[in-house]
Length: 137
Ligand SMILES: [Zn+2]
Image (tube, rainbow, N blue to C red; front, side, top):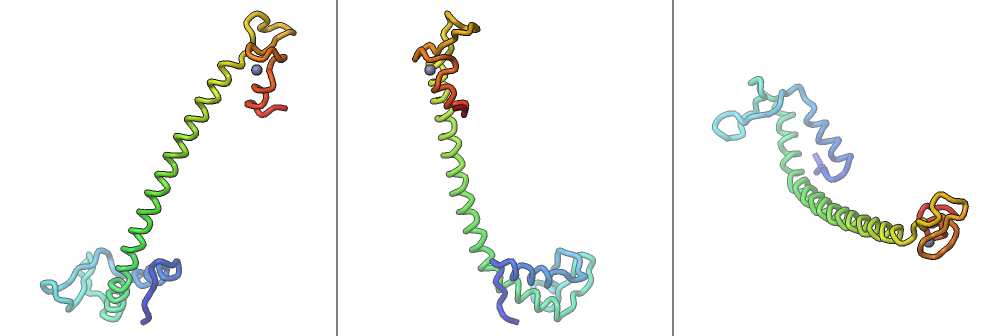
């Protein structure tokens, strides 16, 4: 049997295929830790060809699986850091927008009239700044 690359979907499918036996997991080693046989959770002796192939594949795959898990953990850390930065940027932008809205507001003296204008720039309400924030032209 050639080595199975557990970091590829094909390799993982092959490992799952090897695991897909009639055995009831988890397996246990029989006879005081020496590999003379493997029994399943129902105390059924595993087929020696299947258990040997599975044991070899699992042990051979383990270093790559552990490396892949470590790499995934590092990726998750990087993504979490990026997400935190993104959240901070979003909060900062929201605060900036709120500060602009606080300055560019409908002037009190003409609120609700046909002559409503911006308190900051005197432009007809809503002013171009507020329209830009709202996505209007
Ligand atoms: Zn304005």
